[in-house]
Length: 218
Image 1 (cartoon, rainbow, N blue to C red):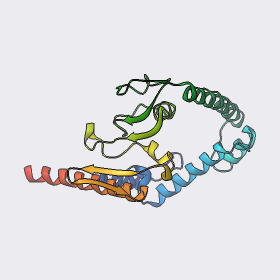
Image 2 (cartoon, helix red, strand yellow):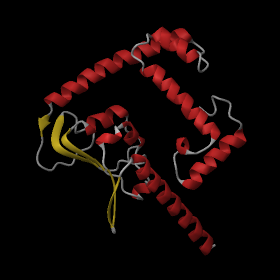
Image 3 (cartoon, one colour):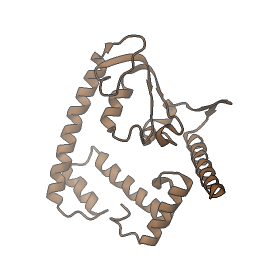
Image 4 (cartoon, rainbow, N blue to C red):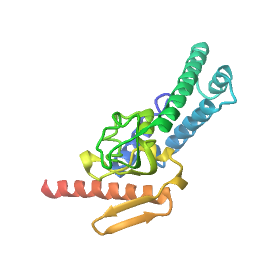
C-alpha cells in the first residue's frame, strides 16, 4: 500500500526502521503514513465485506477510494470470490457438525486435523514464523476442531518467534484470555492491547540486548 500510494522513500524507510528497531509489525508503527495506509486498507476491507453491495457497487466504491484500472474485471473477480466464500462456508459448517471423535491425546498437523474434533485443542507454534504458510481457511479448520476450549501457544525465540500470529486479532477479544507464562509465573492480561504492548516491549528489550551484546564483543 505504501508503494501504491506513492509514499516518499525517506518516509517509508523511517517507518520500516522503526518497525525493525522496536520489533513490531509495520502496521503497528506510530507514523502518519502508516496510519493513512492502514486506514485505507480498512476502508477497502469494509467495502469488500459489505454484503448489501453488489459487485458493481463495490467496484464503484473502491474506485472512489483507490485507482481501479479494469472495473469490469474487478467486478468479475469479486463475484467469483463471493461464490467461493459461500461454498467454503457451507462446507466448513458441515465439517464441524459431522466431525468425528479422536483419541484422548493426538498430535496432528492442521491439514490432517480436518474432519476430526476434540473437546480441547492446543495449537502449537501460533506465530508468523511457524505458521508463515498457513491460510485463513486452514487456521479456521484447525481452531474449529475444538468443542470446548482452544489454546493458541506462542513460544518466544521458537525459530525466532516474538509474537502471536496476526490471526489472533481476528478472534473477538471477549472470547479470549490473554496469558503470558514464564519461569516466574503466569500473568493474565485484562485487555488484548495490554497483552500486545507487553510483547512489543519484550521484543524491543530482546533486540536491544542482542545489539548491546554484539557491541561488547566487537
